Image (tube, rainbow, N blue to C red; front, side, top):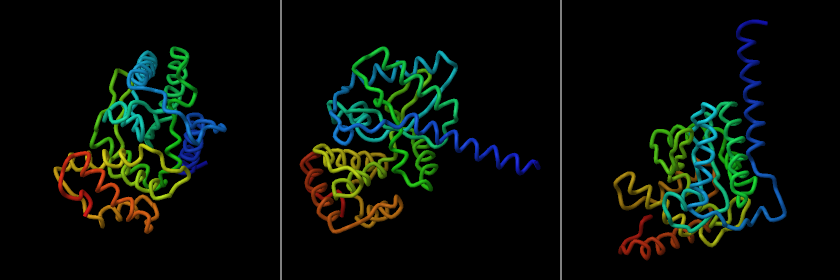
Length: 246
């Protein structure tokens, strides 16, 4: 076997092993999976993440993951009282990183029986276009908006424009799951954070449509209605007299 063939074989093996780790961390589907109850509050999540961090640190690791959804709102933005899990990704994790995360998450469950085995998972990676996974990972690492940090584990927020686009998509009827009661407020929070990060106060609708194209989401007439709802909710939330998306 030539050197190039050996490198290619190793690369395929690593990809397959990483895919196995993805399946290990993705939650198993149950009859109630599509509408889980938000029952993990700020303190519960914070303690659980501390337990994961402590486990990883004890075993000589230091892992960074990127969170999306309810954990960001509950821990970082404090715009929700609770969520049902910590949903994360990082396309640069090694096999050893995955092993530490799996074992750390299970150790946290043993320490707090309020946690289910799905509380810490990377199911979201399956909904990110494969060609965007590295890009989103690198962008989150560059922006480095920390929502949790302890020896052994750092949790960053996903890029705000990505999180916003996913919320608008679900509110518009896209995706596998139906819209939730908190989705509109989440979208408002995410676009607000996006603007704070960039020092602006409005976003062109063409920019939002560009995000949809970039993340391979479908733009339909329903999106226009959702954008109008986001504008109205943003005005009410932040007491401004202008549309945030124009």
